Each structure stands twice: as structure tokens, then as C-alpha cells.
Image (cartoon, rainbow, N blue to C red; front, side, top):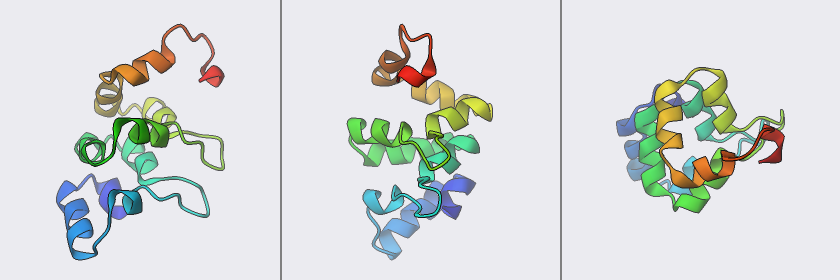
Length: 111
């Protein structure tokens, strides 16, 4: 998670190359919280790391991770809105599939 929190794409690349990690390894669910690295990236406004992960994952899988609920019933996409991660929010809402999930919804619980 440290590479994601720091938003260091170089460190994420090193982790994948040197430690032979895949995109699936980077997006695993923490057993204690059920958070993924996306929760940290979204909390800290690390848009470059977000873009890097987005480039590694198929769009539907990326979106699935963004809407994955942790044990506290929070989703990474909620974190970026709550913590004012403007660059991340803008990047995410540039994705049509994400806009479509929100369009016409007056209650976030319906997503």
C-alpha cells in the first residue's frame, strides 16, 4: 500500500518488476479492512497512481474495484469525494461508465 499512498508510479512499477507482482496482486483486498490500494490512492488524491492502475486493469474490473465495499461499508470512490481528492474525482468522472452509474440517482445507496 505504501507505493499507492505515496502515489509513486515508479515504485509501483518496481514492485511489479522486481517482486514479480501483477495488477491482481496490487488490487488485492486487505484481510483486516477489505480495502484495496485504490482506497488509499483515492483518499490521498494520487491521480498518477490511479491512471497507472487504470491502464493495467480492464475497465469493468477497474470500476468494480472502485465500487467495492470495505468492512466499514465504504467504497474507494466515496473516499475521493469525502477527502476532496479533486484530481481523482475529475479523472473518475471522465469515465462514461462511472457517470452512467450516478446519472439519475438521487440516493447514493442505489448504486
